[in-house]
Image (cartoon, rainbow, N blue to C red; front, side):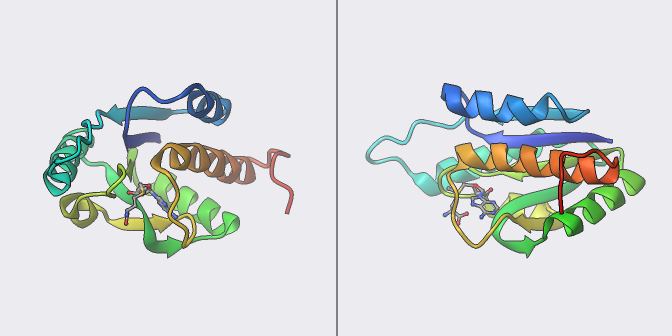
Length: 153
Ligand SMILES: C[S@@+](CC[C@H](N)C(=O)[O-])C[C@H]1O[C@@H](n2cnc3c(N)ncnc32)[C@H](O)[C@@H]1O
């Protein structure tokens, strides 16, 4: 199964790239797709930018992919439950697309397109951090499924 992690935001600071790569390199078939984040000038129409970034996000979803929106209002899974979800995704789909929004969150169209919404917690996390947490948690779930000693219950 391929995992496309589609994130609004490009040109990440070094700490984000380093943190993300630390886990992404361990996880087979994790593909990061970055959607350009438009500049937020003082009088920017934020709703329009969010909608446009949402359109680019939707366009990046592979055909037939199972779509999961990262959203603080979504379902919360503990790590074992995430491993069960991961197992289900692997069994049923060739590609899973995980969507991460920008500063204003995912557009309504992205949320409507998603078959599931995954909440990492009730806290609002910065979009830069979310990709790192997702990569680490996916690696953790993968290590449980493969009896790798990374995860200790
Ligand atoms: C800064 S947050 C956007 C906050 C925005 N006000 C909202 O209500 O979604 C940027 C993105 O990070 C992701 N995100 C932030 N916190 C999250 C959480 N606790 N669980 C899942 N995803 C989260 C979501 O994809 C969100 O669109």
